[in-house]
Structure formats: structure tokens, C-alpha cells
Figure 1 (tube, rainbow, N blue to C red):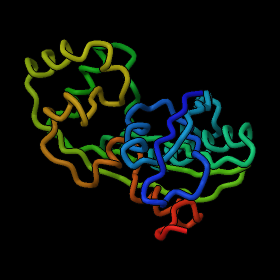
Figure 2: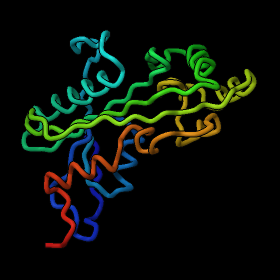
Figure 3: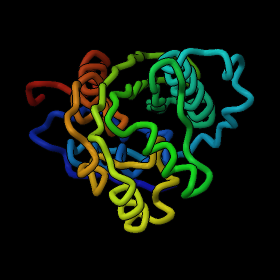
Figure 4: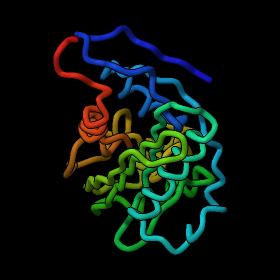
Length: 212
């Protein structure tokens, strides 16, 4: 279990650290920057065993996986607030998955180049196996037309990191060079819609506007 517990800021946080049921460095970095104290406990969910996983639309699948991750971890961590998150990428009506090889990642970039695609980011909050709040937000990414030279140069620079994200790019790093514009907020693109998450914490009384 990894733990990050930043100092209390302006007396706002009124709860013990949450649990982030995700190994995503991007999501962890967002919580750190917002100074939300958290521990990391990975769910190790076998997504292939989730009921209906192959038939669900991309946004619904993201919501189902986020909820199942949070539920599983919350059953193992009594009394703790657990945040599960998942993200799916839809190109037209087709969902893309993480590439299993650099060649496959390059092919995904060829398919995405010059076209818009949608990132569906879902978050679910559970305590003791019971849902507290959930939401789905969508961002539309418009990727630039990419030459074969650009794709191969990018792949050479990224190496095995191409296999860590759906579509083969991380918009918060070198992947920014591939993007024309984004419709939606960057928190949704990274995979943790932070404004909605903070609103959920406020509704639960975990963040208080005035010092006690």
C-alpha cells in the first residue's frame, strides 16, 4: 500500500485519507496537486470476468468497471472511502484497448490521426461495499493529421510507454504534440474529473468551506 498524506490545507479537509483504487500515476498526481490525502490500494479486478463486459457501450463499461473496482476494495477496507476510476476510448462506434505491441500502438495512432475520438472517464465512490456517488464525463480529442514519419519518431521516443495508455498517447506529456484541440477539461482527459470528485467530497462533508 502506497500512502500520500499532504498537510491539511486551510482547514478544509475533514476526513481521513481516501483510498484510490487505481495504479494510475496521472490520477495520483491530480490528487496530490489538489492536496487530497490518499492511500493507493489496487483492486486487481479481472475485467474479463465482469458481467456483460463485451456488450456494454464504452461509457457504460467505464462506469461499470469504476464501480466494481471501488466496491471490491471497499469490502477489504472497512469504513474507508474508496474511489474507483476507469476510462474508455471510443473511435466512432468502436472501442479501442491498450495495445499489446508497439506495432499495434502505431496502428492505433494511424487510425486516430486526423479524426476526433471520445474519452469516457467514470468515477465511483464506495464505502463498505455501498455506493456513495458516481459520475461519467466525456472529452472529445481532435488529433492532428500525422505523417508516418511523425508516428514512427513518436514511437521511437516513447518506446514501451506506448503500451501503457489506450491510443498510445499521454496528452499530459509528449503526446500533446499529436493533438489539435480538446473539447472538455483536462482532468477528464487524464482520467479523474476532479471538479466533480471534489463536489462529491463536499456533499459527503469531507471538505468543509469554513474552518471549524
